[in-house]
Amino acid sequence: MEIKRKKTKSVKIGNVTIGSLHPIAIQSMTKTKTSDVEATLKQIRELAGQGCQIVRLAIKDAADAAALKKIKAGSKIPLVADIHFSYKLAIAAIENGADKIRLNPGNIDKPEEINTVVSALKQARIPLRIGLNSGSVKDNGPRKSSMTDRLVKSCLNYVKIIEKQKFHNIVISLKANNVLDTIESYRKVSRLCGYPLHLGLTATGSSFNGVIKSSVAIGALLLEGIGDTIRVSLTDNPVEEVKAAKGILGSLGLFTSGIQIISCPTCGRCEVDLINIVKELEAKIGCQRLVKRSDPLKIAIMGCVVNGPGEAKGVDLGLAFGKNEGLLFSNGKIVRKIAAKDSVNVLLNEIKQRAKT
Figure 1: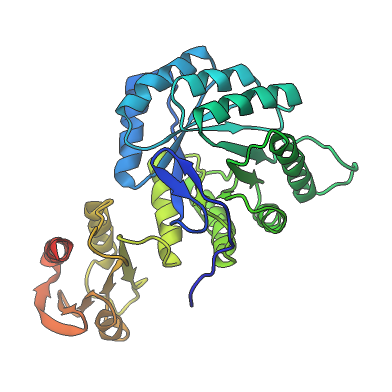
Figure 2 (figure 1 turned 120 degrees about the horizontal axis):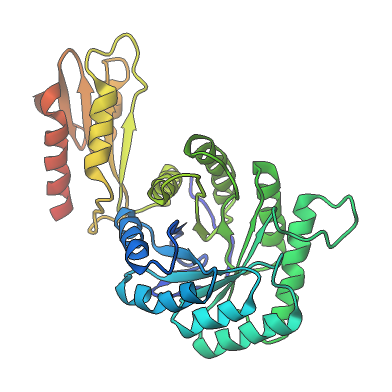
């Protein structure tokens, strides 16, 4: 099955272009105070090292906006300035080199202020993200309007104000705190405009619950061809957001040049410590990218003879374990037996060899 993406406009954010003609980009957000340049850059480098392609920074005051200049000089990925309440902070962020501005229609809604920001965006030739959240969207319709209708109506009203200035360098997000409102909001707005969509939920909670909710909502939308960039918002280290985003895209075959691990859940037949073998391999792989491949390297690590050999034969690299040892498969053929204690190192060496070819 091939996912057919809905046609959307191309928008360039620094050195990354999003839209239906381009790969889906992974985003995250720093959780440091932006004016702390050293701490913020450290976190950006950690995120970039995991595969984050665009990063958003909270611009709370003038010191945060001014810090963007130094942060941009040290960052290899584009910076999005997250602006609330004060349009003047958006102007300052643009002046200090932001690659994109995010405005929240729930707290910056005066047409004259919006137009001032749009004029500065035009001059700087950078895009705007119209970012709506269920927690701050205004009730601009009937008292019993659904959250979906409120988000979509607020978004389209904002778009109209901006388009009057002949500005179309726009990205849209409509994030609710639950799966169903989020899915329906993005479905509706995707039918009504052709701007690229930034997918995500807001206030998802802890890593465990947040990954589940985000996977369901983002995955459902991506399967329908909706979405051009994603962020998995978690109450956790932002590196975990990137890992989750890669997992969602990888499960749908949308994250290329990566490594996909297939492993069994284990049961009473398993006679090796498969859980820790898989965890150790994942930790050591990190964000290794196989730049000469256009599709993920698939690795199967299986704990017994029921499904093990079949899964191991059907991927690029496979291990099918018996008691304390396993059969190593390469492109469907048995290579040799290896001890369970050596399995992680053997697979890492095989991965390195594949990366060279």
